[in-house]
Length: 462
Image 1: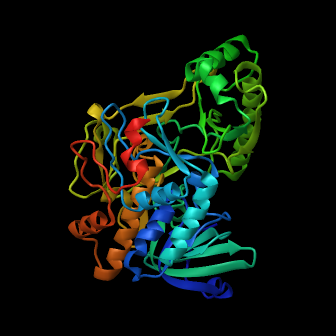
Image 2 (image 1 turned 90 degrees about the horizontal axis):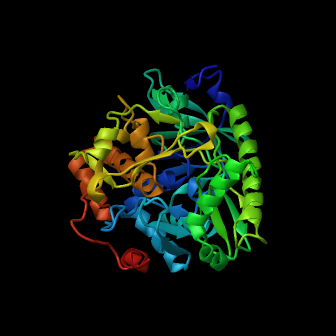
Image 3 (image 1 turned 60 degrees about the vertical axis):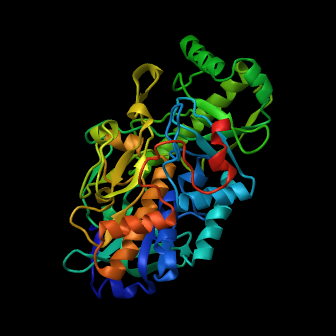
């Protein structure tokens, strides 16, 4: 069955046109929301944002509660992401729904937030900007003209199928669904390098955090996880994992479950992964109750909306970011964002050992991410943003933090708008517009911040 539908009255005329727009963004995760907001800057263009679930945010609201990537790791951190991502955190900060915390493995200061409040923040920012957000709308097909240029999509809703026509497209689906349906080439995770494992996050209430910390905190937790695996008392999937306080008293959130060797682009294997993730989550609950001080009376109060997927399809762009680019701190003339996050590669490991491989950008620096990584090779009407951007496995494992995916969305949305106005994307003009929005394209030479919100100024006090 063809994934790309060419104009045909026998097929398409039976599907009503719901809307015509200037820019269509597929996927309302952190990248897609930022892309839609950027595309609406100045209010010149009509923007539609598609989302298959009933709320925006994607990973930021479905499974996680911390933004990483705003700051470089190390003892002398720099803020390297700004603009639209700052507006998001500023809104959370105004609602007292943010605090800052270090990362267990030194990935840099994390911006912890209330994910339920973030759903409302995304709603309000999108509505205020004039983005038309279509929730419960699932992409099912791409429509093209005889030359292969994208002209529209088909969506599935509870009222049936509809078409949406657009002049420009941004694939922020995470899994490159639009590119897949449009036959745009990509590399699938696992084709060359092992795909990163998946994780069902879970949250627990009624945790005595004081008792947990006094018993040794994170160091104690790792020791007891390892002992439980070695003794066989609890069939944990790994010897390492993390838990941290949430933006709610007495509650913690985790990244501990590990599900590997299943393909999340195959719906049947994804279903199997979901079931396995839930099974493992309750094994952890029992372990924590039995073995970790402070958890004796705690219980799981929520699982991630779906299992967390780290990588699937990575589109072949005009340029592919590489490990060498990250580790050598490569500079690009067409840079549109910065990243200082380490390579954090969650690898499947035999025997349940520690499977996460870490590699840090030297000297606390941040490398450039070029515009060309957001442009599918040979295309002029579509951009990618988020974890489907053009990168090798290793580089992707560094540049997939949500601060970076928001920055990608900001760049893609701005580029799409610029292309409508001028017919081309002039890089100096694009960079100028991004800087006007507050984006950071140069690494500060010292501790530097933008704006005045406490989350930006006081993060060194944690």
